Image (cartoon, rainbow, N blue to C red; front, side, top):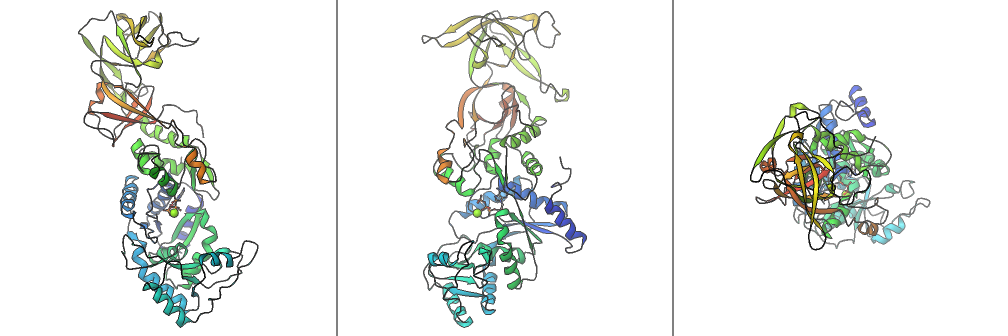
Length: 550
Ligand code: ATP
Ligand code: MG
């Protein structure tokens, strides 16, 4: 894995060149989310890239809310975004809101009008679309294209003052209706929207379009390298045009890279919002969501997400990363950090009939068989235990080495037990199994008398703590398809299973967001939303093993 911040990539090379040639003394990057939803793992890629480059080259990185679209819910999103960036481990140098630049943007638009490079157009949105032409046909000029500078300035001012209805007029750049690049065919710079803005209230009823606003925001902040996703590649000539014709003193350079896509995952705030609004998930931070908040609640660590983002690298062509790769990085991170414990998720009572009643003993079980330094912990053991229902079969197939009538297994860290009797309820369901243990076989005593093929885990029935275990499968069955209707039809009905079981008493100290490696089951996080004083709720982050290789 790369030993520097971002690994080698083409963007880093551009920056190195710019620093070596003294084009820039210092670099300034930015992460510019639109506060219209919670951040997802795709944004993490952009955060790690922008902040990583800023850190590596001792430059600066701004967090800028691209809030040029008025909408109601922005305040909650702004707070969640700040929180997520910090949780990932980054500090911004400056915090900005694009809406604070509205005055300057308005003045720059007036400048374009004065230079004969912008005009107010009264065509309807449909007409504008028709006039724009296609990839093979040039566009047609708007009949309003040749309004005088004075008239344009006057109408634009009236637009600002609220004299016109939404959609009745727009300000357009006057570039080239026959350009082979459709983005250059007199793009819209301002539209009318009589909407409340979270920051500017009702001061404005005209709002700048992304293609006009974004280059100005970058130039105002002195951003040197404006890193964005590939779909903006064809917008770059317009980006450069805006910076130049608006006579900005600083000239940011736009560089595009490929979006992150992950298998079985939808990756767009709009779609994620639909999952929340439709009640498919419990909220933006549902542990099945690919949001930073969801991954955090599931139990992912900032390190695992950063390492994943660095490893996938930065490319110029879109591709889809296997979700198992993200899992690999959290396993790798938690392997050395998470304390071990035993838990039974689907309990079946096991009674050791020859173990003395009303006694118990303490066993010392190693925390990490691969690392002695992790020490041992005390685990109580007595006559009645719980084991995993799946670890017993009355009529086992061949090569089943766990418990069945007449068979002997090792209880992890304890004794050999042999199954002698199966107790069933009136419906024929197994409710208890009776075993005998062999006191000679205690773990750690060096017993070599005979061997058993299976080792199963257990908890002591009297002292174990009841707990809820939430097991997850991918939320989306197949990969996102082209049409929206499909993704809501492809929800996995088994994405969440809730199990009630027990965990060993060492977990009595657990607080929310503590992480455990539960023997044979995987890594789990103490859920911060549903855990209460009386009830521990665990989210399975990942199972222990995967066949995934990369
Ligand atoms: P969404 O479609 O999820 O709303 P967006 O691109 O509209 O994504 P913004 O809030 O505008 O979201 O994005 C902020 C930054 O994050 C932008 O620079 C954008 O390019 C980047 N970004 C968004 N999604 C991804 C992704 N999947 N992979 C990499 N970068 C992304
Ligand atoms: Mg967006």
